Amino acid sequence: MEKQPGKQITWVIKNFSTLQSKRVQSDIFVVDLCRWQILAYPKGNDKANHFSLYLAFAGSEYLPLGWRRHAKFSLTVVNQFSEKLSQLRETQHWFDKTNPDWGFSEMISLDELHDKEGFLVNGEVKIVVKVDVLEVQGKVDVSEESSPVMETIDVNGFQVLPWQVESVNRMFEKHQDIASNFSVNTTLQNFRPKNPYLKTAFMNVLLSLTQTICHSPWEISNDDLAEEYAALSYLTAEGFQLDWLGKKLDEVKEKKQKEKACLAQLQEMEEELKPLKRKCSEMEAQMDTVKAELSAAKYPVSLYD
Image (cartoon, rainbow, N blue to C red):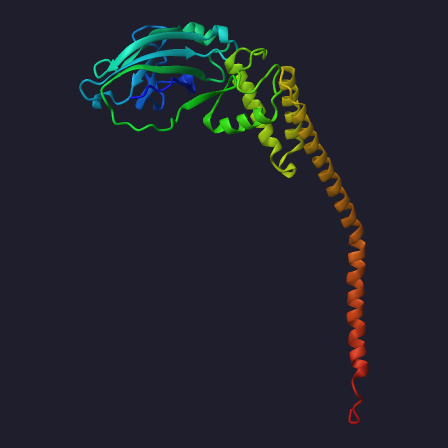
């Protein structure tokens, strides 16, 4: 079997502080034609006051005899404010029917997770797993399938979701100077934010901005426009070269101003038309009266009335 490249999967655990279950698990994702899951113990797995984290093969009870996978993997509890503070653990393990999961019972202390800024943000904890299958023994008939978990793909130094790849590639191909010292087919070398999670956040802001611009100006409120300018200023301050996007945003602003001017002009014309319409209505009523009188005048005189 041809060895497949490793994959990076992102899993967000929502409402972490209020979870009642002893164990929670991610959706299933596929690496090397096998189904995997991340297992998390929010209050620890036989380790008090710790967050425990494991990589597991999904459906181990159905594995045939002789099936084994030697995988190198890493698990990271992401600090969304500082990459240096993220808790990363790496290991290798032979996964089989009797040993279907492996990981770390003391991934991070709950005191650190709750008290240190960046780990628990808006009630969410973000987990990243990277899996690289090194050796394969035995066959499992599992077809490759897309993962319901957020599988990210590296595009020029940014981790983006699969459905974002085409948009990001097109943007970089058309605007090669989108970041300082950027060159197509290479990763960013001197781009200021080195934290990949911050870079991903910046890219999401940028993609959201471009998607908003693609909407009809009629659908974009003035508040939306103000937010887009703020986002543009923010991205520019972080080192993005976005003059081209600023021009597009200015075009949207001009269209919005033209829209406002046209609506005001139409309202003014409507107000001017009101007395004219009223006059026309009165004239039409008078004409109907005169037409009735004309019809009566044309009627022949009767000799016997």
